[in-house]
Image (cartoon, rainbow, N blue to C red):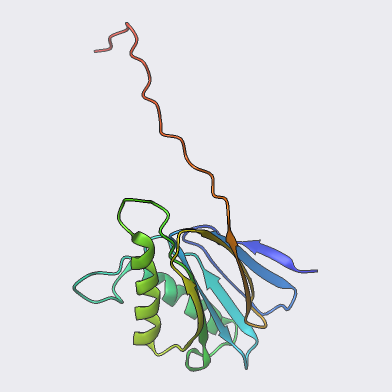
Length: 167
């Protein structure tokens, strides 16, 4: 039986225990799963706004800092950066009619991996559905399921004014 570790936005997890499973749910966010087969060590993060800059250094962002934190934690567990391989997930367009942060997030993931020379073995990004992701870091196996129904958020109703005036 797997020991699940749930990661939320801005978090990451690393493990080498074959009984550990890392899980998250992604909308416009992305997760990059890294794995070093020789060390049997893997890790996954959940990036909300990686901050890919249109002009400037794409590696001088909060996302790049989070990636370095994940890589360093894997190295601490015995992985070697040169042997790491990646899988990229998420980046959905969840806010219809608004800025498409999901595609910008996915582009950050691709750019980071390319610039850092980390091969990406698989990706599932874009679309309009959320994803449930399960990652087994000791083996590098990722399982992804599209979530068919995402709750629609009701607009916030303004409160009615009262007769009390504060000054």
